[in-house]
Length: 401
Image (cartoon, rainbow, N blue to C red):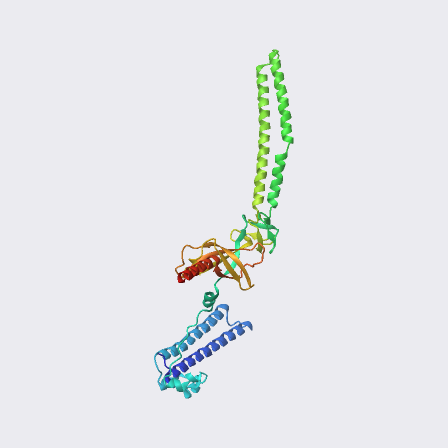
């Protein structure tokens, strides 16, 4: 049991003296540092940068060591037991040494020097209950409403932002365009591929050549039948027809490849467009046209879905045991003084060993947009719990009868 005596007063006064000495030393060190800084500003070239830094560092180290010495000395004297009168006169400042009870003048009457000298006991400490704990215990568990979906939109590729279509607060639907990277090079490549795919001149020329070679071949065959031509000429004409046919097929294949190249470029261009994956509201836009999107920071926007809100409670195990998925619970939003119902989506099958609480997720229908995300929400009694209590009360009443 702690009792305040004159010796205890002396210890307290000695510790106060040590603190005063530490503060005085700190002020002196600050003054030294200020003087050095002012000399440097006036253009004092006697100190170079390294010497100036060394001087400031030395002043700070001296300040720390001095303050620590004063405080340690006073603390050791306080812990070593009651100070003798001689030690107290040496350690304390003159005004305190002459009047040891001066520092207790501001104490309540029951704790002043007269009562302390007689060994009056300190009042019994009172343990205050946590404000949050008492509030939760009396009014229900609290959490915060949050969007059921929060999507951080990221660019699929690196590049420079070419177009920003949305701004904060815009309502978007799934597949709406949000951003578009610069596509100057891809657009040029696409035009070239389209030109190759749609070109008909080479194909028509190859077809004309094939028809001419075919007619020449038939003439050679007829001359050979009339014994006016040679087999070599017929064979040569046949080879020319085959080459013309292969030329036509090559041109057709090139056009097909150009068409595929066009589709590939269009796919690349679509990949550089960023679209919303959900219906929701844009709450953050982090890039402007001309800014670069890198692999290290691809996040460019945030979209949330507010038609349904989620509230995550951490309930005591005893209370969570009476709640099951699908139950309807009553909720209170204290900040807006709104009441609503929520559906339990998930009850964790395990209890957190450290806190002794169970995670319970509740969904709130917000299609009308009446409830805000991010406000406090208090869970009241669930309908299933109330029904269970009424049933138990009815059984008890019947048993009494």
